[in-house]
Amino acid sequence: MLFGSSRISARTLNLLRWECANITDYLASFGPTHGGRRRAVLDDSGEFIRVLGMPLPTGYHPPSCDLILLVDRFPVQPPCGLFLLDSHKAQVRKIAALFGGHVYEDGYGFVPSIPGYAWVCYYYEAQRWRYTPEAPAQGDNLRKFLSSFYAALAAGDDA
Image 1 (cartoon, one colour):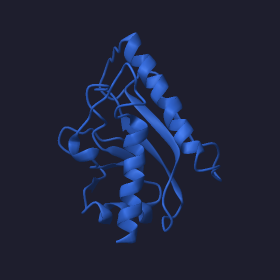
Image 2 (cartoon, helix red, strand yellow):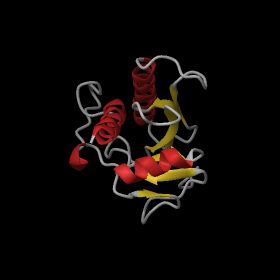
Image 3 (cartoon, helix red, strand yellow):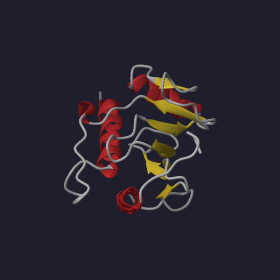
Image 4 (spheres, helix red, strand yellow):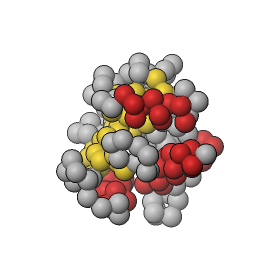
């Protein structure tokens, strides 16, 4: 556990399970990866989601990455940025350049450090978050968060 003992409600746990399935569907739309199946996995504590095989736009090597989304404040708040597995330093540097250097190896301020990961200071929709628990597909959700991150990478690569 990243933050000590975590207790989440059954309702939040069900929403997070739905989010993982929704993210996995999104990842599957990109086709298979060479490193295995793309998927989202909820940690047993319910504090974070591991996104395995997140595709990256053309021009990134390798063409996918593994991420962690902290969801300890979900569904009230979106993830505060995301954590990028930093095993491919050139990939991390390219993303850092795109985000004006706002990628940190040791966390930042209130954001914890996760060994082996770099934190990307990425905000969804100008820090707007309108989650609809009764109909999560209709409001903002974690799939849309990742989709917007992908779009930011693609737009930055074209610039």
